[in-house]
Length: 405
Image (cartoon, helix red, strand yellow):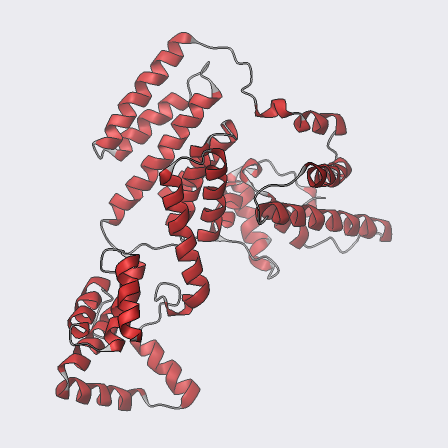
């Protein structure tokens, strides 16, 4: 099956990827890709695509209008197999126990093999992958001088990271990755360290401002950190830290469903690490909260006060100017209400107020001190999310309980 118009070969170049995004995906409403998937396609390197991205491209691409009936039937059959492959992936990814027994493994392996053979894979080569030896470290030729140099660079990079010189650390780790004659497992460590430094660099660049979850281009340090973490996993599939790094990136991107999956893999490989449990608990907590009241989080539906007033006018006919007059009257007669309204304006942004979570938290805290349930609830939300104040789930829970009392 070809996803390229007029049978042009995909050459894994960024030119090919960008052209496909512009000429095919942008013109086809059937595609529903994440920002990370879009960037990976623009890069053009099909080796970076996961099953979800690849099947989306193949299943949603428009077919030529000059196909014969036999060709249509062949493509229909291939689409069916792609959907089956995607379903198997989803079943394994979201498996409740994160483990399958021998019988289930054998059946799934047979199903996957039958699908891949149709698409041209060799069943003999696939059988080799089934052998447990695939998880053993491959026999590699070692260059002692390069190993020594790689170790030196890694040590320097680690120190640079500790000193907060994250760009220097990344450069040193990257030099270590390209040296020949170094074990894959060592290179996995280097890529894991690069991923860690990229995330630290991103946080430093944010300089305490609120995180913007969406990745805009391939230069975003979080996107690069994700690629490095995945490389670490590929080089050493059974090392817990590679999966842990992937989870940390997804957590930074607020994709906590994927973060939980990666942290669970890491924990299955190393169940004694407290840092994995802590990160897993954190992402589970946030994921659960998002599922319960994601619509209340201003970062997921960031509408300014004017936008919200206009929405009220459209839905129930309230005049925005009349409502603002009522707010002004309330502010003049009740200082606690005034603090809440000011906090709300800072939380969402208004005509004459720039969004500032820290200022919002200060006004909510001031109002909460007067015992109002609504004020405590607003402060609890920001505390639970870590917006404008230090993230503290225990304190947020206490505030929620006080607000409900």
